Image 1: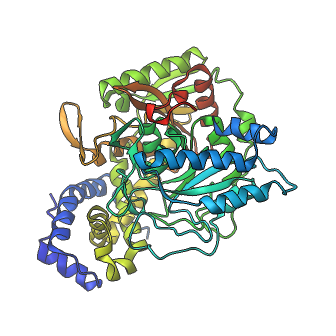
Image 2: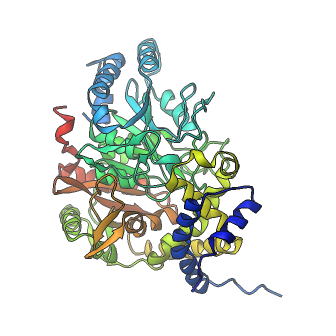
Image 3: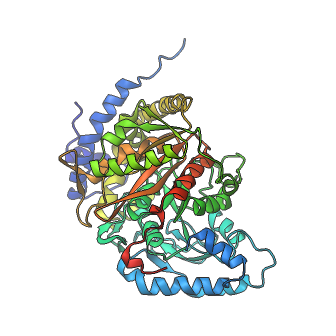
Length: 54
Length: 460
C-alpha cells in the first residue's frame, strides 16, 4: 500500500515548484495522502491503461 | 414569498422593484447578523438599479426581483473575494456571464454571498469572513461551499440565488438549509467570470425556495456563451413551461446503497418522499450504480491537480493568506502524479458509460442528498453507521457521482429530523434538467416541506 512521502520529501517536491509550505501544512498534506494514495492505486488497478496499439 | 410569486406580483404592479429591494434590504439588516449569509450587500447600487427599472421598456422574467450571488461570481464594480484574503483587492470590471443574463432579465443583485474559501470545502466556515450559520439552528453549519446561498434562501434574505457546484456545493447547502437547489449539467451554464475550482466539474446553478424558482433562474442563465470554451451549444428548453407535465409513468431508480447508508432518520424521510412520488404515478425501481464507491476517488484524481493548477501562482506568492484547510487541499495537488490524473480521466469515461447504461432503464435516479444532518460549527465529524466519520468523507458518495458524470442533480426539501431539514436528491440524464425539475415540482405540489421556514426567518 502506498505510503505518503516523508515531510522532508514533500518539502523538497514543493520547493522545486516554488512553494514553501510550513511543517503544519505538510502534516495536513500527509494525512490527505495517507487516504488518497491507496485509493488512487486501487483505481489504477480497476481501470488499467489500455495497451497501445501497434 | 417564492421568487415566482414575487416576479408575478412585480409584473402585476402589486409592488415596485424598489419596494421589493427595500423589503429584502430591511430583512438583511434585521437578520443577517445572525446567519452571516452575506459578504457584501450592494444596498445603494441595488436601490438605484431597482429605481432605474421603472423606466425600462422591456420587462424580463425577473423584472425587479432581488437576487444574490455567491461571492465567486463577478458583479462589475463589486469585489469578488471568494471568501479569501487572497482576492481581497479584486474588483472585476465586467459582469460574469450569468450576472449579465440576470440583469437582462430584470433582476437586481442585492449582494454577494458567503462561502467556503474559494468554494473548496463543504463547511462555509471561512476564517476570513466567519461561518455562515444555519437559519434552522445557528450553531450548525449550512454546508457548502455555497453556504451563504442556503442561509439567504432559508432566512428570506434573497428571492433567489446563484451558487456554484463542483462536488456538491449547490446540493449540500440546499439540503441542510431546506432550500431547493439544482446543479445543472456541466457546460449548460457559462462559467465566464466565475472563480474556478476544478474546471472539468464546475458549474453555476440556482438555489431558491422551489423547483419553479430554480426553473425560472435556470431558464435565464442557461445557454451558449461563445466566450466560454467549455460552454455547450445545446438548446435550452422552456423549463418553466414543462413543470406542469405529469410524473405518471416516470421510472425513478432508487439508489438503494445510498438510502441504506444514510442515517436511518434521513433514510426514513427519503423513503416517505419516494412513496409520495409513487403515489403521484412514478414507478420506483431499485438500482445500483456501478463505480459508485469509486466516484469520489475518480473525481479527486482530477480535482486535486486541477484546483492546484488554478491556484499555482498564488501558492507561490500568497500561501499564508489561505485558511489552513484550503491551503492543505491545494498543496495536495502538488503531489498527485500526472499518471493519476490520466487514470481519473479513463475512469471518468468508464463511469459516464455506466451511468448512460443505468439511464437506459430509468428516467431519474433518487437518493438522499446528504446522509447526515448538518454538524455543529467547529465539528468536522458526524456519526454514521455507528461510527464517527469525517463529514467531508461522508458527503462524497452522495454528491461526487453526479458531478463526475456532469449530470443534473437537484436537492428538494423532503422532511425535518430534530428540526433540521433533509433533502431528496433527484438526478437526471445529461441535459435532462426539465425532467428533474418536473419531478421536483410535482413533489412540491403535493407536499409543503419547501414552505417550512425556520423560526429565525419570522413571518413572511
